[in-house]
Every structure is written in C-alpha cells, then in structure tokens.
Image (cartoon, rainbow over all chains, first blue to last red; front, top):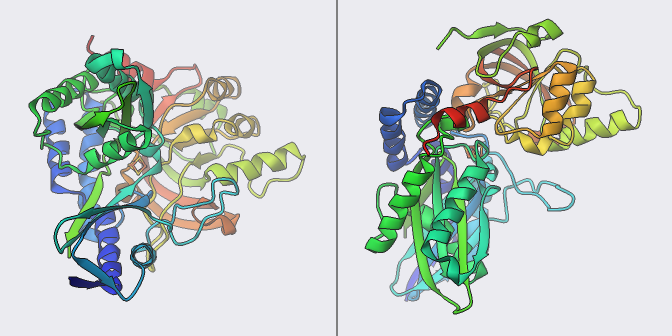
Length: 279
Length: 185
Ligand code: SF4
C-alpha cells in the first residue's frame, strides 16, 4: 500500500486549475497554427491570429486565456494499491479547486440550477473516479466552458442508422451549433455503452491530444471523415466564415445493448484546457 | 480588408444605420456590461414601470462576465459570452434606446427584427480572445447589482475595442453570409 495524503492531492489540483487557465496546450497551439496556414478567409485568418496572440498573452502574463475559466471536471485514476490518508478524496479535490480558483483570480461559475445563486468558490467540481491497477494516482483537470458544453448532446440513434447515421448526426450537431461554441472546436464523440456512458466517453475523447488518432484504424478513419466534413461546413473561426471550424475530432467506442446505438457529442472550444499530473 | 470604422458611444440612429454586416469596428469611449441575471433585472424593472439604474439611450452593452480583477489591473479576462441567452430580454432594451450589443453567436428573429425596427446593431467580439480583449479595457467600475459578482453591470472605458458587425439595421447577418461563402458542397 502506498500512501498519498489528501494535502498532496489538494496541492496538485490547485496547481492544475491555475495552469489550465493560463497555458494552452502545445497541441492546441500547433493546431491553430496549422489552421492559420490553410485558412482562406481573411476574417478567419484574423481571428486565428488573435487567438494565437491571446494564448501568448495568457501564457506569459499568467492571465486567464478566457474569462470563462470553466467548471472543473476532474478525472481521477486511482491505483488500487494507493491509500489516501488524512482526509476525504472528494473533499481534497474540491479544496484544490477552491484554492486554485480563488488565488489565481479565476471566475467562479458554479450555481444552483433554479435560483442561479453562485456557490462562490467554483465547487462542487465534477469528479470521475476510476480504480486502476498500480500504486499511482493520476489527476486530469479539464476547465470546461459553458458556451461549448451547451452545444453538446446525447442521442439514442437506432441501430439501423449505423456508421453513416452517426457521422451525419455529429456533423449536423456541429452545423447547428454554428458560432456559439467558439470555433475552431475540438469534437469528442462517444459511441455505445449506455446513455450516460456515451457522454462520459465523449468527454474522455476530448482528453486525447490533438493530432493523435484513435489506435483502431476504423475509428481513425471515422475521425478523419467527420473532421473533413465539418471543415467543409464553412462556419470558420469565430463563425465568421472559413475552413477552420474544427481542430480535431476524437471518437471513442464501447459495446452497447443490442437494441441501442447511443451517440454523444461533446464540443470543446479552442480554449481546450486539460492538464494532468501523476502522483 | 477595408479599414475599421471608429465609433464612440453614445451612438445615434445615423451612426448605426451606416454600419453593414462584416464591417470591422473599433470602439473608443464607454460601454456597459451585463449578462443573464442583470438583463433579467432590467427587464423586470421596465415591466413594472420602475426607473432603471442605468440610462440605455445610445449605449452599447457588452455581454461579459469577467474574471475577478487582480490588484493593479483595470479588469480581469473579459471576452464575450454567448448571446442567445439574452435574446428574451434584448428587444425590450432596444426599444428603450439601446443601440448596440456585443457578444458571440447568433441572435433570434425577434432580436433581429427589433434591431431593424428601432435601429440598433449586434457586434461580435472574438469568443475566447479574452486576455487580448481585456488589454483594450482601460478602466471598469460597477454601476449596479454588485452582489451579482461577475454578472454585475459595469461601465467600461475602452480604447480601440475590436468588434465586427454581425447584424445591421437592414437585417443582414454576417454568420449566414460567411457560411454561404465558405461552405463546400
Ligand atoms: S466557449 Fe470556450 S472560448 Fe468560448 S467563451 Fe466559453 S470557455 Fe471561452
């Protein structure tokens, strides 16, 4: 049994929430640069330049790249040989979010669904815990903005809709979202499982680095097809018209019920904030 | 691309009637901020016949909920929020003299119609370019609803604040035009 203290977990989450808000991942920066090279629309080029400059200002000045610093979505991979000592794991994570968002002057964006009263400290975080073999603890934090999350959907397709039906559904969802989710976007697609598992798969798909296709050739092919179709929609950067509507499409798949074909589309904006650490 | 149009609020009917979807605009001077909760309060006051805490005549309202201001800075990160959430409220504010709105994303037919009828425009700022945008904000003060935190109504002093006209007073829509021009069948 390896011991990890609640305090270490709080510290780790705190620093992840800060660095996610300030430092855009290299994969995202590279994808924006590639988009700029290929973009033919003048306003599209202008927007991509602004986004690259924005990322640089945020990175150098330790300034939030977007004012919506998001709900903190935390993926925990807890080794089964780890013992969390000195506190409750969930509370340790929430405390890290609380401290990180407060000390770094990040926006607190969590409220009650009816009264809309802000909880004031960006908690509760959304926590997904997976028990895995080993004696390590892996923490991944995603700062999820409301604009792109609102454009996400779960759909129970008919098995007869098949692969083409899935592709059409995802492309249609992006088309209907138009300028709202701050394109260029990253599209996470979860196929199979159950209603809720499809949504989680879609969110997990977003964690993969841009430019790394699914290892399954059939799914990699599907990712390419959806990506090409999305970038023909004409939405473009900030929705002002152009080719760079998506920076990447990531598909994850799992077996499902013989009667079902669940599909989830989780859209992430270009403020594609994911940071991870292993304790 | 042609040179940007320079605007200084308060705006007149003539100022906004001269703008066309796709025009790049730099705003210098003052503008107001507000999002969902502040809009709801303003509209409730209007419906009850009560006085508003701010004068909307000729003003531009920026849909933004900034990050908390760090010591020594004018404002936190301050990019636009998605505008459709304000659609239910905007027509009433436009009727009360609001001339411009800044946000991101498409507006409803009702809002577009109100803009045509009462001469107002809708601008987009680049969603997510929030660190860059906040450099164009010189100062910020809370005018009303401080208890709403990021959703309070502020008065901003801005310099060369970059936006683009999405909906003009003739009912044109830049998002539709852009997609039409760049979509590949
Ligand atoms: S969708 Fe993303 S980039 Fe756009 S405002 Fe929200 S968090 Fe920021």
